[in-house]
Image (cartoon, rainbow over the protein chains, first blue to last red):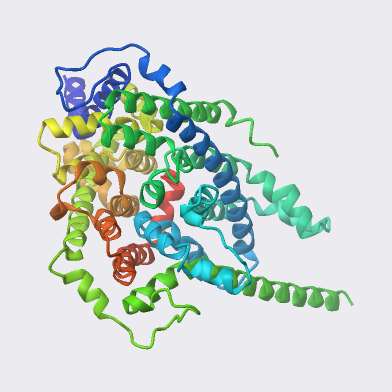
Length: 293
Length: 285
């Protein structure tokens, strides 16, 4: 009797979260998988969803925009993640116990991270304006004859977006690294001091190895979130010039909400999911092995 | 002699520390230069924004830019501000309700299926929200949640990471407290509100801040679900300014500064809880 009552209470307390889970997660996921195999265009209604097998996926192979988005997204991730991590690790180690005013400095490096992405994009647009923006004015004053055209140049648009992403992401990685540094066992450093190890040796043989779990965590989470980049692309370049900055989520958005290709866009969502799933699998598989000290 | 060497070493350490502080301060200033430029541009006349060399403090401080952006008759920014505050506030209330009840069920009540449901929640955490975007759009469209702030508030309230965060806290509470209350005949509702909630306030504040910043900066969801200008949140309001043909950057920068300053104030006043929140959940990135 009592157990039955407890079960009832259990589900009563879980009701809000279970409802949210079912309505906003479970049903949409199942529906999304189904849509990936259809030609739905949303406009013709729920009664006009036609199953077309793997057609959406075969169509991807010849889709220039889609292929560009895969390539660009990999380039973006492969540059943003290492650069962000190296810079934030460096800043974290120095801020941890080698400076005065640590908290004030930490705040400065952190602010871009909490800043509104759209506000930051708008700011980037003004600063990197090719003809009148302060960045190019400065470059010309420094003697650069023809500075990059940044967001309107196929060669530089991605670089501009990457710069902005690194700038906003450093704060987050810095906080995680600083938290990890504060939890490192001090005994090892004391022992190293007795042995007369210099700072470089301590960094190479103690700090960096002890931080591998944190680095691993950050590589995984940053990889996952860089594959979901959208706001700067949509606001700054709309995937252009040409296809030079289109990424997966932008492609999904463009197909779904500009052309109403809901089926095809859902298939792109599946590709995004597959990539993130693969990264997560790596995390599960190597979580323990990466910890080497 | 040893004493002398030690002192020499200390002196050297202090000098290194001062040099590094100077370098890192220079780096920090360079780091926030874009934001300083933004604030500076927001206080300039339209024609002065791009004048080079940069005049960091304009001759005449145009505070009227802010007044214009906030109160102009075409699209006053206060509407977007109000909408963002409303959405963030209601989502925080919703998330606190969903997270406390779920965390309580997962830790304080024993019943069949509990662990299975928990594993299910855990398994879906890696599913990117973009995967569910199209079905949510179809769903909201069909059930009249399109162009309705509930389309942002309800899914935002289902904050899975918050459930995990609170669950961790609840697990660390000594079980004697709720157990003895139970023996005294207290109901689950009373135990949650009178015993558990008061001792887990820090975790709840972390959730408040994480939800606030997520909702304040959220872009893709409002872009899809909200198309009426009257319902725009701050990111959409900013985008509308940028899409405008005239593009007065001094006004745009005033709006952008207004958007960023709120998060910075929230962050400054509750730094400790915010950092606790992101280090414990490893949220976003």
